[in-house]
Length: 132
Image (cartoon, rainbow, N blue to C red; front, side):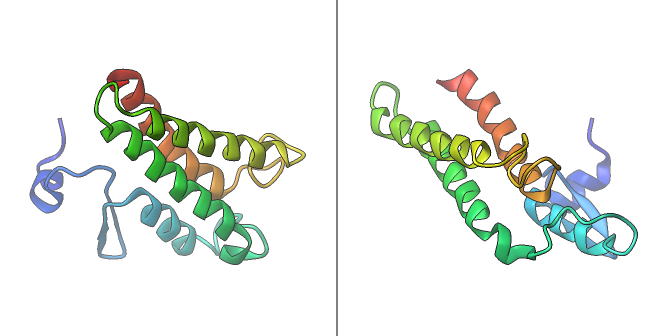
C-alpha cells in the first residue's frame, strides 16, 4: 500500500523522490537529481566527459523506450514491423555492450547509463512477457 502522501501529491505515480523540497516523479530525472545532489559525497556515476560522453547512449536508450512502446501498443497479430524495430534496437544495445571491455555500457564499472537502461528494460520485460 502506498503512503497517503504519494497518492495525494503524485496521483499515485512511482517512483517518487522529494529532494531539496522538489517532488520528482520521473526515474531518469530522479537519477540525475541524485547524481547532482550527492556529487560531493560519492563517486560520480557519470564518466569524466559528462553528459556529452553519454549522449549517444542516452539517445539509444530513448530509441529503446520508443521501440518498446511501439511494439507494446501494436495490435495483436499486426505488430510485425514494431517487433522487428524493437529487435533491431536490442541488437544495437547488444552491440554497444559488446564494444566495451567489461559487462557495462562504459566498460567494467557500473555507470548512470546502465541504470538508465535498467529502468526501461525492467518495464519492457514485464510488459512484453505479459502482453506479447
